[in-house]
Length: 87
Image (cartoon, rainbow, N blue to C red; front, top):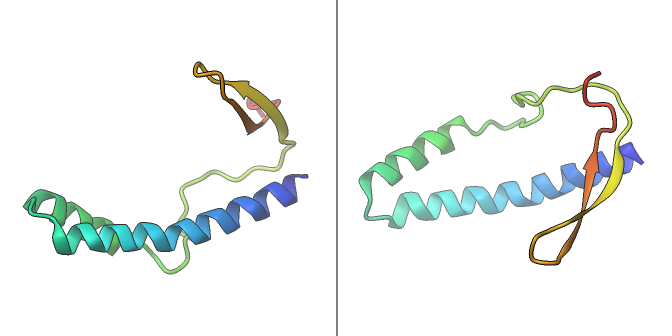
């Protein structure tokens, strides 16, 4: 289950990464706010070709479990949680 979750998460990140870069270039090219343009350029320059190699996420083996979360607006959300986060 963990492998499936990680594969789906990787696919989501990959698809969203292209949209994020497109949004950043739109801000860089169209914003009238000079500070926003400068910040966007800095972010675009920091984006590497291999996001896994430059990731700051800690990696550790473990078991992940799906958990239903109830939001204040009545909606339900599935979240993947680590039942033993202290390890």
